[in-house]
Amino acid sequence: MGDEMLLLPDRPRVAGSALTTRHFLLLYAAMLVAAAGNTALQSVMPAIGREIGIADFWVTVSYTWSAVLWVILAPYWARQSDKHGRKALTLVGVGGFIAANMLCGLALLAGLKGVLAGGLTFGAFAICRAIYGSLGSATPSATQAYLASRTRRTSRVEALSALSSSFSLGTIVGPALAPLFVLPIVGLAGPLFVFALIAVIVFVAIVIGLPDDTKPRHGHRSGHGAAMSYPSLASAPTGASVIAATRPRGKELSWKDPRIRRWITAGVIAGHAQAATLACIGFFVIDRLHLAPHGSEEEISIVMMAGAAATLAAQWGLIPRLHLSSRSLILWGSLIAASGLVVTMFASDLYGIVLGFGLTSLGFGFTRPGFTSGASLAVPLAEQGSVAGVVTAANGSPYVLAPGVGMLLYAADPHWPFAAGAALLVGLALWARGRLG
Image (cartoon, rainbow, N blue to C red):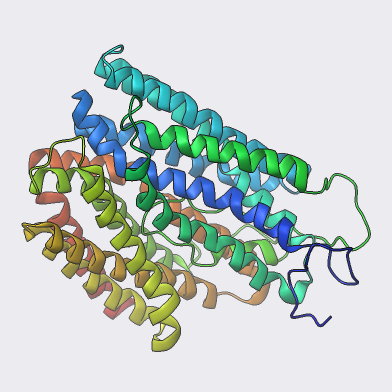
Protein backbone atom coordinates (compact mmCIF):
# COMPACT_ATOMS: atom_id res chain seq x y z
CA MET A 1 0.00 0.00 0.00
CA GLY A 2 1.09 3.58 -0.60
CA ASP A 3 1.83 6.13 2.12
CA GLU A 4 -1.57 7.71 1.66
CA MET A 5 -3.26 4.72 3.29
CA LEU A 6 -3.83 5.47 6.97
CA LEU A 7 -6.41 3.02 8.26
CA LEU A 8 -6.34 -0.67 7.61
CA PRO A 9 -9.17 -3.20 7.79
CA ASP A 10 -9.23 -5.47 10.81
CA ARG A 11 -6.91 -8.09 9.43
CA PRO A 12 -3.24 -8.97 10.06
CA ARG A 13 -0.89 -5.98 9.89
CA VAL A 14 0.85 -5.20 6.64
CA ALA A 15 4.15 -3.45 6.04
CA GLY A 16 4.25 0.18 7.10
CA SER A 17 1.36 0.39 9.57
CA ALA A 18 0.10 -1.18 12.77
CA LEU A 19 -3.25 0.62 12.94
CA THR A 20 -6.64 -0.77 12.00
CA THR A 21 -9.97 0.95 11.52
CA ARG A 22 -11.28 -0.60 14.73
CA HIS A 23 -8.34 0.71 16.74
CA PHE A 24 -8.75 4.21 15.31
CA LEU A 25 -12.46 4.21 16.16
CA LEU A 26 -11.67 3.27 19.75
CA LEU A 27 -9.32 6.25 20.07
CA TYR A 28 -11.89 8.47 18.35
CA ALA A 29 -14.66 7.31 20.69
CA ALA A 30 -12.55 8.12 23.75
CA MET A 31 -12.22 11.73 22.59
CA LEU A 32 -15.77 12.05 21.29
CA VAL A 33 -17.58 10.89 24.43
CA ALA A 34 -15.65 13.37 26.59
CA ALA A 35 -16.32 16.34 24.30
CA ALA A 36 -19.99 15.44 23.86
CA GLY A 37 -20.50 14.88 27.58
CA ASN A 38 -18.81 18.15 28.43
CA THR A 39 -20.94 20.27 26.10
CA ALA A 40 -24.09 18.39 27.11
CA LEU A 41 -23.35 19.43 30.69
CA GLN A 42 -22.97 23.06 29.59
CA SER A 43 -26.42 22.98 28.02
CA VAL A 44 -28.21 21.81 31.18
CA MET A 45 -26.24 23.58 33.92
CA PRO A 46 -28.06 26.94 33.66
CA ALA A 47 -31.40 25.17 34.07
CA ILE A 48 -30.08 23.09 36.99
CA GLY A 49 -28.76 26.19 38.73
CA ARG A 50 -32.05 28.03 38.38
CA GLU A 51 -34.00 24.93 39.48
CA ILE A 52 -31.92 24.55 42.64
CA GLY A 53 -31.83 28.30 43.30
CA ILE A 54 -28.11 29.04 43.29
CA ALA A 55 -26.67 32.32 41.96
CA ASP A 56 -25.74 32.19 38.27
CA PHE A 57 -22.16 33.22 39.03
CA TRP A 58 -21.52 30.21 41.26
CA VAL A 59 -23.11 27.86 38.76
CA THR A 60 -20.64 29.01 36.10
CA VAL A 61 -17.64 28.93 38.42
CA SER A 62 -18.52 25.43 39.61
CA TYR A 63 -18.10 23.88 36.16
CA THR A 64 -15.47 26.19 34.64
CA TRP A 65 -13.23 25.20 37.54
CA SER A 66 -12.51 21.98 35.65
CA ALA A 67 -11.31 24.07 32.69
CA VAL A 68 -8.76 25.77 34.96
CA LEU A 69 -7.41 22.42 36.09
CA TRP A 70 -7.36 21.19 32.48
CA VAL A 71 -5.23 24.18 31.40
CA ILE A 72 -2.80 23.60 34.26
CA LEU A 73 -2.45 19.82 33.92
CA ALA A 74 -2.75 19.24 30.15
CA PRO A 75 0.99 19.86 29.55
CA TYR A 76 1.83 17.44 32.40
CA TRP A 77 -0.23 14.64 30.86
CA ALA A 78 1.28 15.37 27.46
CA ARG A 79 4.73 14.75 28.92
CA GLN A 80 3.57 11.63 30.73
CA SER A 81 2.21 10.19 27.50
CA ASP A 82 5.81 9.99 26.28
CA LYS A 83 6.95 8.06 29.34
CA HIS A 84 4.17 5.58 30.13
CA GLY A 85 1.85 3.36 28.16
CA ARG A 86 -0.52 5.39 25.98
CA LYS A 87 -3.35 2.90 26.38
CA ALA A 88 -3.09 3.18 30.16
CA LEU A 89 -3.21 6.97 30.06
CA THR A 90 -6.16 6.93 27.68
CA LEU A 91 -7.98 4.83 30.25
CA VAL A 92 -6.97 7.27 33.00
CA GLY A 93 -8.68 10.09 31.11
CA VAL A 94 -11.81 8.12 30.25
CA GLY A 95 -11.97 6.74 33.80
CA GLY A 96 -11.73 10.26 35.19
CA PHE A 97 -14.62 11.32 32.97
CA ILE A 98 -16.75 8.39 34.17
CA ALA A 99 -16.04 9.01 37.85
CA ALA A 100 -16.59 12.75 37.57
CA ASN A 101 -19.89 12.43 35.70
CA MET A 102 -21.32 9.81 38.04
CA LEU A 103 -20.36 11.73 41.19
CA CYS A 104 -21.43 15.09 39.75
CA GLY A 105 -24.71 13.55 38.66
CA LEU A 106 -25.35 12.23 42.16
CA ALA A 107 -24.53 15.61 43.72
CA LEU A 108 -26.85 17.48 41.34
CA LEU A 109 -29.61 14.89 41.75
CA ALA A 110 -29.41 15.32 45.52
CA GLY A 111 -29.80 19.05 45.06
CA LEU A 112 -32.70 18.72 42.62
CA LYS A 113 -34.49 16.37 45.02
CA GLY A 114 -33.93 18.73 47.97
CA VAL A 115 -31.63 16.36 49.84
CA LEU A 116 -28.79 18.90 49.78
CA ALA A 117 -29.02 22.67 50.04
CA GLY A 118 -28.01 24.71 47.00
CA GLY A 119 -24.60 25.78 48.32
CA LEU A 120 -23.68 22.25 49.41
CA THR A 121 -24.87 20.85 46.09
CA PHE A 122 -22.64 23.05 43.99
CA GLY A 123 -19.74 22.77 46.40
CA ALA A 124 -19.90 18.98 46.06
CA PHE A 125 -20.36 19.31 42.30
CA ALA A 126 -17.25 21.51 41.97
CA ILE A 127 -15.15 19.03 43.97
CA CYS A 128 -16.32 16.09 41.87
CA ARG A 129 -15.92 18.04 38.63
CA ALA A 130 -12.28 18.60 39.57
CA ILE A 131 -11.72 14.90 38.83
CA TYR A 132 -12.48 15.51 35.17
CA GLY A 133 -10.36 18.66 35.01
CA SER A 134 -7.45 16.82 36.63
CA LEU A 135 -7.56 13.55 34.68
CA GLY A 136 -9.56 14.24 31.53
CA SER A 137 -6.74 15.97 29.65
CA ALA A 138 -4.76 12.70 29.73
CA THR A 139 -6.99 11.27 26.99
CA PRO A 140 -6.20 13.68 24.11
CA SER A 141 -2.42 13.55 24.55
CA ALA A 142 -2.39 9.77 25.06
CA THR A 143 -4.60 9.03 22.05
CA GLN A 144 -2.52 11.38 19.89
CA ALA A 145 0.68 9.64 20.97
CA TYR A 146 -0.82 6.19 20.43
CA LEU A 147 -1.93 7.10 16.92
CA ALA A 148 1.33 8.86 16.05
CA SER A 149 3.41 5.86 17.11
CA ARG A 150 1.53 3.65 14.66
CA THR A 151 1.35 5.98 11.69
CA ARG A 152 3.87 6.87 9.00
CA ARG A 153 5.37 10.32 9.41
CA THR A 154 4.00 11.32 5.99
CA SER A 155 0.46 10.43 7.08
CA ARG A 156 0.65 11.62 10.66
CA VAL A 157 -0.83 15.11 10.25
CA GLU A 158 -3.85 13.72 8.39
CA ALA A 159 -4.34 11.01 11.00
CA LEU A 160 -4.12 13.34 13.98
CA SER A 161 -6.39 15.91 12.33
CA ALA A 162 -9.02 13.22 11.84
CA LEU A 163 -8.68 12.23 15.49
CA SER A 164 -8.94 15.84 16.71
CA SER A 165 -12.15 16.31 14.74
CA SER A 166 -13.84 14.20 17.44
CA PHE A 167 -13.81 17.24 19.73
CA SER A 168 -15.52 19.30 17.01
CA LEU A 169 -18.18 16.65 16.43
CA GLY A 170 -18.73 16.36 20.17
CA THR A 171 -19.67 20.05 20.45
CA ILE A 172 -22.68 19.31 18.22
CA VAL A 173 -23.54 15.81 19.45
CA GLY A 174 -23.55 16.80 23.14
CA PRO A 175 -26.16 19.59 23.01
CA ALA A 176 -28.20 17.62 20.46
CA LEU A 177 -28.54 14.63 22.78
CA ALA A 178 -28.75 16.41 26.14
CA PRO A 179 -32.53 17.11 26.04
CA LEU A 180 -33.18 13.47 25.13
CA PHE A 181 -31.38 12.33 28.27
CA VAL A 182 -33.44 14.43 30.68
CA LEU A 183 -35.19 11.36 32.02
CA PRO A 184 -37.80 10.51 34.65
CA ILE A 185 -36.50 10.23 38.23
CA VAL A 186 -33.05 11.71 37.46
CA GLY A 187 -34.43 14.72 35.54
CA LEU A 188 -31.90 17.36 34.50
CA ALA A 189 -29.04 15.28 35.90
CA GLY A 190 -29.82 12.55 33.37
CA PRO A 191 -27.26 13.58 30.71
CA LEU A 192 -24.41 13.15 33.20
CA PHE A 193 -25.44 9.58 34.03
CA VAL A 194 -26.11 8.59 30.42
CA PHE A 195 -22.79 9.92 29.12
CA ALA A 196 -21.03 8.20 32.03
CA LEU A 197 -22.62 4.89 30.98
CA ILE A 198 -21.62 5.47 27.35
CA ALA A 199 -18.08 6.15 28.55
CA VAL A 200 -18.11 2.88 30.53
CA ILE A 201 -18.83 1.04 27.27
CA VAL A 202 -15.97 2.90 25.58
CA PHE A 203 -13.67 2.14 28.54
CA VAL A 204 -14.41 -1.59 28.37
CA ALA A 205 -14.00 -1.62 24.58
CA ILE A 206 -10.57 0.01 24.89
CA VAL A 207 -9.48 -2.44 27.59
CA ILE A 208 -10.49 -5.37 25.40
CA GLY A 209 -9.86 -4.11 21.90
CA LEU A 210 -6.88 -1.73 21.96
CA PRO A 211 -3.50 -3.48 21.86
CA ASP A 212 -1.12 -2.90 24.74
CA ASP A 213 1.69 -0.49 23.88
CA THR A 214 4.05 -0.84 26.84
CA LYS A 215 6.38 -3.11 24.86
CA PRO A 216 7.80 -1.90 21.53
CA ARG A 217 6.78 -4.04 18.58
CA HIS A 218 7.65 -4.25 14.93
CA GLY A 219 5.96 -1.51 12.93
CA HIS A 220 5.70 0.96 15.81
CA ARG A 221 7.22 4.40 15.30
CA SER A 222 8.20 7.23 17.57
CA GLY A 223 5.38 9.59 18.42
CA HIS A 224 4.40 11.89 21.23
CA GLY A 225 1.27 13.50 22.55
CA ALA A 226 0.51 17.18 22.94
CA ALA A 227 -1.72 19.23 25.19
CA MET A 228 -5.12 20.01 23.68
CA SER A 229 -7.38 22.89 24.67
CA TYR A 230 -10.40 22.27 26.88
CA PRO A 231 -13.34 20.92 24.85
CA SER A 232 -15.91 23.69 24.92
CA LEU A 233 -18.70 24.87 22.71
CA ALA A 234 -17.78 26.78 19.55
CA SER A 235 -14.09 26.12 20.14
CA ALA A 236 -13.14 23.60 17.50
CA PRO A 237 -9.48 22.50 17.34
CA THR A 238 -7.31 24.58 15.03
CA GLY A 239 -4.41 22.20 14.54
CA ALA A 240 -2.02 23.48 17.21
CA SER A 241 -2.02 20.18 19.08
CA VAL A 242 -1.53 18.31 15.80
CA ILE A 243 1.54 20.41 15.01
CA ALA A 244 2.90 19.89 18.51
CA ALA A 245 2.42 16.14 18.24
CA THR A 246 4.11 15.85 14.83
CA ARG A 247 7.15 18.08 15.42
CA PRO A 248 10.18 17.16 17.53
CA ARG A 249 10.25 18.80 20.92
CA GLY A 250 12.58 21.77 20.87
CA LYS A 251 13.56 24.74 23.01
CA GLU A 252 10.68 26.20 24.99
CA LEU A 253 9.21 29.30 23.39
CA SER A 254 7.75 32.19 25.42
CA TRP A 255 4.63 34.05 24.37
CA LYS A 256 6.68 37.22 24.93
CA ASP A 257 8.90 36.33 21.98
CA PRO A 258 8.60 39.41 19.72
CA ARG A 259 7.90 37.24 16.69
CA ILE A 260 4.66 35.84 18.10
CA ARG A 261 3.68 38.22 20.92
CA ARG A 262 1.14 40.21 18.89
CA TRP A 263 -0.49 37.09 17.47
CA ILE A 264 -0.82 35.48 20.90
CA THR A 265 -2.18 38.74 22.34
CA ALA A 266 -4.85 38.83 19.63
CA GLY A 267 -5.81 35.24 20.36
CA VAL A 268 -6.07 35.82 24.11
CA ILE A 269 -8.22 38.95 23.64
CA ALA A 270 -10.63 37.18 21.28
CA GLY A 271 -10.67 34.15 23.56
CA HIS A 272 -11.68 36.21 26.58
CA ALA A 273 -14.58 37.76 24.68
CA GLN A 274 -15.69 34.30 23.59
CA ALA A 275 -15.35 32.62 26.99
CA ALA A 276 -17.17 35.42 28.83
CA THR A 277 -20.18 35.46 26.51
CA LEU A 278 -20.30 31.68 26.24
CA ALA A 279 -20.67 31.45 30.02
CA CYS A 280 -23.75 33.71 29.87
CA ILE A 281 -25.61 32.39 26.85
CA GLY A 282 -27.60 29.65 28.60
CA PHE A 283 -28.85 32.02 31.29
CA PHE A 284 -29.60 34.64 28.64
CA VAL A 285 -31.80 32.16 26.75
CA ILE A 286 -33.81 31.38 29.89
CA ASP A 287 -34.27 35.05 30.83
CA ARG A 288 -34.91 36.52 27.39
CA LEU A 289 -37.44 33.82 26.42
CA HIS A 290 -38.99 33.78 29.92
CA LEU A 291 -38.57 30.01 30.25
CA ALA A 292 -39.09 27.82 33.26
CA PRO A 293 -35.76 26.21 34.24
CA HIS A 294 -36.99 22.67 33.62
CA GLY A 295 -37.59 22.42 29.89
CA SER A 296 -35.27 25.28 28.92
CA GLU A 297 -32.53 22.81 28.03
CA GLU A 298 -34.09 22.30 24.59
CA GLU A 299 -33.84 25.97 23.59
CA ILE A 300 -30.35 26.25 25.09
CA SER A 301 -29.24 23.18 23.13
CA ILE A 302 -30.58 24.62 19.87
CA VAL A 303 -28.59 27.81 20.41
CA MET A 304 -25.44 25.87 21.32
CA MET A 305 -25.72 23.60 18.29
CA ALA A 306 -26.12 26.64 16.05
CA GLY A 307 -22.93 28.09 17.52
CA ALA A 308 -20.95 24.87 17.10
CA ALA A 309 -22.21 24.37 13.54
CA ALA A 310 -21.28 27.95 12.60
CA THR A 311 -17.77 27.50 13.98
CA LEU A 312 -17.27 24.29 12.03
CA ALA A 313 -18.70 25.91 8.89
CA ALA A 314 -16.07 28.64 9.20
CA GLN A 315 -13.13 26.36 9.88
CA TRP A 316 -14.02 23.45 7.61
CA GLY A 317 -15.91 25.25 4.83
CA LEU A 318 -15.19 28.97 4.48
CA ILE A 319 -11.55 29.37 5.49
CA PRO A 320 -10.18 26.78 3.01
CA ARG A 321 -12.09 28.53 0.20
CA LEU A 322 -11.55 32.20 1.06
CA HIS A 323 -7.74 32.00 1.37
CA LEU A 324 -7.62 34.94 3.79
CA SER A 325 -4.39 35.99 5.45
CA SER A 326 -3.92 35.49 9.19
CA ARG A 327 -4.37 39.24 9.74
CA SER A 328 -7.59 39.28 7.70
CA LEU A 329 -8.99 36.31 9.63
CA ILE A 330 -8.54 38.17 12.91
CA LEU A 331 -9.78 41.49 11.57
CA TRP A 332 -12.92 40.21 9.85
CA GLY A 333 -13.55 37.52 12.43
CA SER A 334 -13.54 40.11 15.22
CA LEU A 335 -15.99 42.36 13.37
CA ILE A 336 -18.32 39.46 12.50
CA ALA A 337 -18.27 38.19 16.09
CA ALA A 338 -18.90 41.70 17.42
CA SER A 339 -21.90 42.15 15.14
CA GLY A 340 -23.23 38.77 16.26
CA LEU A 341 -22.98 39.80 19.91
CA VAL A 342 -24.96 42.96 19.17
CA VAL A 343 -27.66 40.92 17.39
CA THR A 344 -27.76 38.49 20.32
CA MET A 345 -27.99 41.30 22.86
CA PHE A 346 -31.10 42.81 21.23
CA ALA A 347 -32.76 39.53 20.20
CA SER A 348 -36.25 39.02 21.59
CA ASP A 349 -37.01 35.48 20.39
CA LEU A 350 -35.30 32.15 19.79
CA TYR A 351 -34.73 32.86 16.11
CA GLY A 352 -32.90 36.09 16.92
CA ILE A 353 -30.71 34.46 19.57
CA VAL A 354 -29.82 31.58 17.26
CA LEU A 355 -28.97 34.02 14.47
CA GLY A 356 -26.90 36.25 16.73
CA PHE A 357 -25.01 33.47 18.50
CA GLY A 358 -24.43 31.67 15.21
CA LEU A 359 -22.95 34.83 13.71
CA THR A 360 -20.84 35.33 16.81
CA SER A 361 -19.49 31.79 16.61
CA LEU A 362 -18.82 32.19 12.89
CA GLY A 363 -16.59 35.16 13.70
CA PHE A 364 -14.75 33.29 16.43
CA GLY A 365 -14.32 30.46 13.93
CA PHE A 366 -12.16 32.92 11.97
CA THR A 367 -10.18 34.51 14.80
CA ARG A 368 -8.84 31.33 16.36
CA PRO A 369 -7.24 29.92 13.16
CA GLY A 370 -6.11 33.47 12.41
CA PHE A 371 -3.87 33.89 15.42
CA THR A 372 -2.82 30.22 15.31
CA SER A 373 -1.60 30.47 11.72
CA GLY A 374 -0.06 33.89 12.30
CA ALA A 375 2.05 32.61 15.18
CA SER A 376 2.99 29.47 13.26
CA LEU A 377 4.13 31.42 10.20
CA ALA A 378 6.22 33.75 12.37
CA VAL A 379 8.73 31.05 13.37
CA PRO A 380 10.80 28.51 11.41
CA LEU A 381 9.99 24.82 11.02
CA ALA A 382 12.22 23.78 13.92
CA GLU A 383 10.12 25.81 16.38
CA GLN A 384 6.67 24.70 15.23
CA GLY A 385 6.24 22.28 18.12
CA SER A 386 7.13 24.96 20.67
CA VAL A 387 4.86 27.64 19.20
CA ALA A 388 2.01 25.13 19.06
CA GLY A 389 2.38 24.62 22.80
CA VAL A 390 2.11 28.38 23.37
CA VAL A 391 -0.98 28.53 21.13
CA THR A 392 -2.66 25.72 23.05
CA ALA A 393 -2.01 27.52 26.35
CA ALA A 394 -3.40 30.74 24.85
CA ASN A 395 -6.54 28.90 23.77
CA GLY A 396 -7.13 27.63 27.30
CA SER A 397 -6.15 30.69 29.36
CA PRO A 398 -9.42 32.66 28.79
CA TYR A 399 -11.39 29.97 30.63
CA VAL A 400 -9.59 30.79 33.88
CA LEU A 401 -11.15 34.20 34.62
CA ALA A 402 -13.36 35.28 31.71
CA PRO A 403 -16.43 33.12 32.55
CA GLY A 404 -16.59 34.51 36.08
CA VAL A 405 -16.15 38.09 34.87
CA GLY A 406 -18.85 37.53 32.26
CA MET A 407 -21.30 36.31 34.88
CA LEU A 408 -20.56 39.26 37.18
CA LEU A 409 -21.38 41.59 34.29
CA TYR A 410 -24.51 39.56 33.55
CA ALA A 411 -25.67 39.88 37.16
CA ALA A 412 -25.37 43.66 36.87
CA ASP A 413 -27.20 43.80 33.53
CA PRO A 414 -27.84 40.95 31.05
CA HIS A 415 -26.75 43.21 28.18
CA TRP A 416 -23.34 44.09 29.61
CA PRO A 417 -21.28 40.96 28.81
CA PHE A 418 -22.39 41.07 25.18
CA ALA A 419 -21.78 44.81 24.90
CA ALA A 420 -18.38 44.50 26.56
CA GLY A 421 -17.44 41.58 24.31
CA ALA A 422 -18.47 43.51 21.20
CA ALA A 423 -16.47 46.57 22.28
CA LEU A 424 -13.43 44.40 23.01
CA LEU A 425 -13.64 42.77 19.57
CA VAL A 426 -14.04 46.08 17.72
CA GLY A 427 -10.98 47.32 19.58
CA LEU A 428 -9.13 44.16 18.57
CA ALA A 429 -10.06 44.69 14.92
CA LEU A 430 -8.78 48.28 14.98
CA TRP A 431 -5.58 47.19 16.69
CA ALA A 432 -5.09 44.29 14.26
CA ARG A 433 -5.53 46.61 11.30
CA GLY A 434 -2.55 48.69 12.33
CA ARG A 435 -0.30 46.34 14.35
CA LEU A 436 -0.49 42.90 12.75
CA GLY A 437 1.64 42.31 9.68
